[in-house]
Amino acid sequence: MAVPFDPELKIRQLDGDVQAIYRYLSDISATQARHGNRLDEITTTQARHGTRFDQITSVQERHSDALDEITTVQEQHGSRLDEITTVQEQHGSRLDEITTVQEQHGNRLDQITTVQEQHGNRLDQITTVQEQHGNRLDQITTVQGRHSATLAEHSATLAEHSATLAEHSATLAEHTATLAEHGLMLSMLVDGVGSLDAKVDRVLARLEDDDEA
View: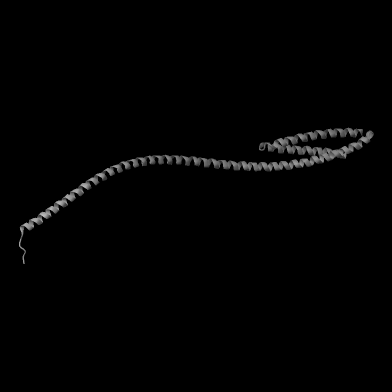
């Protein structure tokens, strides 16, 4: 069964719909106002963020400049460290050379010490011979008549021995002073030792001649 058309009911329905639409539009308007306020707040916040970003960018640029300066200084430090390393290597090489020279000096000093010990032994032999000569001079003194000429020769020989001993003492003193110099003086000292050997040989030869006499 069909419902009869009621214009008033239809109007009331349309009025309700219109009122609902107005309320919905009012709500939309209020929401848009709130959104507008929120957008204004967001815009303000973004502006503050932009300012902060500008400040951060400025700080980062300063940091970048500082890092560039630090990098430059580090490169300079690296160059100086390379120079220091090179100098240290040169010092190491020179120290190795000095050590080698010192070892050579030590070997030459050992040789000189050996030669001096040999000289000491030969001087001991000379002292023994001189003591023997002294004994023989005592014997000669008891026989003055026949050995007057021999005593004169022995006196001259003793004078030569004393002079030779003085030369030996002077040469030994030179050797001791030369030991403190190293280097070039070492070769001079070796020459002096050769000269001393020749002198000692001459002294021994003279002593043997005296013994034969």
